[in-house]
Amino acid sequence: MQLVATPFFFYLLSGLSLLGGVLVITRRNPVHSALALILTLLALAGIYLMLYAPFVAGVQIILYAGGIMVLFLFVIMLVSIEKAEKERQFNKLWLVGIPATFAFGTVIVYIFTRSKILPVLLKKPAPVLLESNNTQQVGLVLFGNYVLAFEIASLLLLVAIVGAVVMAKKRI
Amino acid sequence: MLQYITSYLDPNTKGTPGDVGNIFWAFVYIVLIFLGLSVAVIAMNWLERKILAHMQIRLGPMRVGPHGLLQPIADAIKLLIKEDIMPTEADKLVFWAAPLIVVITAFTTFIVVPFGPSHAVTDMNIGVLFMLGVSSLSVLGVVMAGWASNSHYPLMGALRSSAQMVSYEVAMGLAVVSAVLMTSLSGIGIYATGSASTGTGTLSMIGIVQSQMMQQTWFAFKFFPLGLIALFIFAVAMVAETNRAPFDLPEAESELTAGFHTEYSGFRWSLFFLAEYSAMIAVSSIAVTLWLGGWLRPFPNWLSGETWDMVFALFPGLTFLVLAGICFFSTMRMPKHRYFRVQTIGLAGFGAALAVIGLALFVPPVRDRIQDIYWFVAKVAVFMYLYIWYRGTFPRYRFDQLMKVGWKVLLPVGLGVLILTAVAGVF
Image (tube, rainbow over all chains, first blue to last red; front, side, top):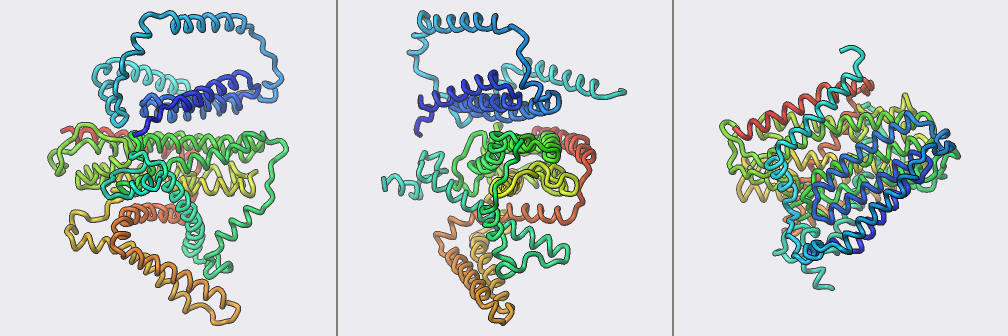
C-alpha cells in the first residue's frame, strides 16, 4: 500500500481551502461566497481523508453539502443581490479583527518555535491508524465512552426540531 | 513496467485495483466504466423512447436506422453541433460550472460501485456514505444552474428540486441505515440465519454484498417484511432523488417548460442529460448492492450445486444470443425494397456482432470473469426498466402531495423499519 498523504496533496488541499476562505470574504455577490465556502469545506474533507479519517470526511461532505444548500436558498430568497453588490460595509469589525488575527498567529508561531513538548511529541512514532475500520472505531467510541455527551447533543437537536415546528405552525 | 501491469492479472491477487494499489488497472477500470456508462446512457435513451411509445401504442423512433436504432447517435451529433447559447444576463461562471458539477458528481459515485468481488475501482471503508454524499452534491449543480440562468422558470425548478431532494434524502438515508444495520445482525428466533452475529457492520459496498453472501440471504428478504419495506422506501426515494416521473416537478414541462435547464442548449444540455441517466444508474446500483445481493446470482440456496452454477454461468452468453436472434428475425422482416438495403445489411451485421460477443462469453475463462458483472448489470437493468414503467404509468404528483409522501409517509415508516430491524436483530 502506497502512502497517500504526500506533502503535495497537503499543500494543494490547504491552498484550496485558504483560497476558498479568502474568496468567501472578498466576493461581493453572496451566492459566489456560498460557492467558495463549499470549496473550502470540500478541501477540508480531503484533509480529513489524508488524516485517515474517512468517516469524518464523508460526514463533512454530506452535512455541509446540505447546509450550504440551505444557505444558498437563504441568499436567493432573502438577499437582494443587486443591492448587496452596491452596498458599502458599515461595521468596523476589521479594526478588531486584524489585531486579533495577528495575536493568534503569534501564539501559533510561538508554540511551534519555542515549545518544549512539541519536539518530543513529534519524535514519537505515529500511531498506526487502520483506515479499514475507522467507521467502526468511531461508532464504538461514540456509543461507548461518550454516550452521555452524544445523547445530550441529540437532545439539543430535538429541542431545535420542536422549536422549528412551533415557529412554523400558525396554530398548535 | 510490464510486470507491474500483468501482476494484477495473477489469479492470486485478490481485491480491487484500489486495494492492491495498482494505478494502471484503476485507470483501466475508470475508462471501462466511463465507456460502459456512456453506452448504457445511449441504449437507455433509445429503450426509453421505444418502450414508452409501445406503452402508449405508438411506434416511437423508426426513421434513423432500422427501428430507430441510430436515433440516439443522431441526437448526440445534433446536440454537439448545435449553437451554444448563454443568456446575456446570466452569471457566466456559475452557469458554466453547474453542468460540470452535475456530471462530475454523477460519474464520481461509480468509483465504489461493486460490479464483482474485485470489479470496482476501489473499495472504500465508507462506500455507501461516499455514494450518498457525492450524489447529494449534485443538487448543488441543479440549484446553481437554476439561479445562474437569471430567469423565472429555471429558478422555480431549482427551488423545487432543492426542497424535494433535501426532504427525500432523509427517507433514503433511513432506509440505507436499516440495510447497513443488517450487515452486523444475524437474527434470532424466526429470523435466525445461518451465520453468527459479527457485532460490527460495514459501510463498504463490497463488504455489504459479502455479508449477504455469508448470511445466505439478500437483505430484501431478511427480517421479512422489514427488508422489503426498506427497499420500497429506497425505491420511491430514489425516483424523487433523480427527478424522474412521477416526481419530475423540477422539470415539469407543462408548468415550467424544462425547469432548471430551460436556458441550457447544445452540449451543456447534453451534460445534464448524461448526468441524469448516470445518476439513475448510480442509485439503482446502490439499491441492488444493499438489498438485492449485488453481483450474487439468483436462487443460490434453492438451485445450488455444480450443475446449477454451470447453468447460471451460461446466462450472459445466452442473453446476447437471444438479442442476436431478435436482430436476425427483424432482418428477415425488413421491407424488401432497395431503399432499405443498407439498413438490412447493417441490422444483420449488428446481429452478427452480438452473436460473436455471445459466443465469446461461453469461453470458460471469460465466462467465469464476466458472470458477476452480468448479474449486477441485469439487476440494475430491472430498476432502469421500472423507471420507464413509472413514467408510462403514474401521473405527476402535485408539490404538496410530494412533500406529504416524503415527510408524513416515508419518514415515519423508515424510522419504524429502522427500530424494528434493530429489535429483530438484537432479541
